[in-house]
Image (tube, rainbow, N blue to C red; front, side):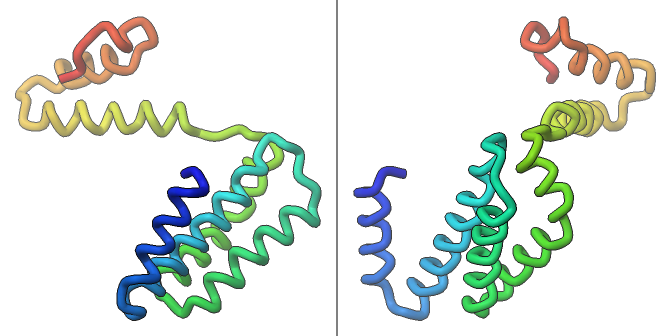
Length: 138
């Protein structure tokens, strides 16, 4: 978002009743802190930079006293070794996750077919490199 759009959004949130606008603003800021941390991927961040950004995110989540942000902070803490590896290497499992999603979608669409071989064939066709973009997986 461009700066003027963020300012307009924050103005709108400040015009809402505090019970509604304040938690949304805090959640927005925590999300931005997490995005700032993840934006350091592939930039070879030093330990101090990562530490400061992570601390800022955790501090905002702790101060917010929102269960959703506390759960998000717990999830980040649980997955921290993997997140740190991503920050340093820039390597993700996006390709395998995308293929897995296609397989599950095909299997869900083909549920109830009498021939399991057809289901396997449909899955294989949808996930092979040559077929991607050329066959409609439905």
